[in-house]
Image (cartoon, rainbow, N blue to C red):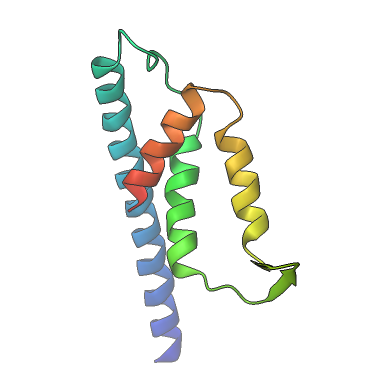
Amino acid sequence: CSVLQCVAVCFWGSQRYVSFLFLVFTLCWLFSIAILVVGRDSLFRQVGCGPYAVIFGLLVQFYFEIPAVSEIRVGRLRVNDKALVYVLSTHLMLFRCPGTPISALCGLVAGL
């Protein structure tokens, strides 16, 4: 019985993950088109290409679902083990302005 439970958990977990990715990808695509249509005469004439939206959609789930394991103090600032992920994702978001931050914000909104 435990083998069947493991297979069911693996199957439904994979299906839930793929469904989440499909939903985030679809929502980000719709948000990107809406931003391009609304902001065609302003700064929002381009949206970053690539998997930025999906990465930042998954980052929202990482924030809410994965707990911090360790924490250290650097002066008065408390830093946990997830801080490196946030620093690298911020660097990725600000890499090519204004297109990449728009895609990243679409992913963050879709990941909620």
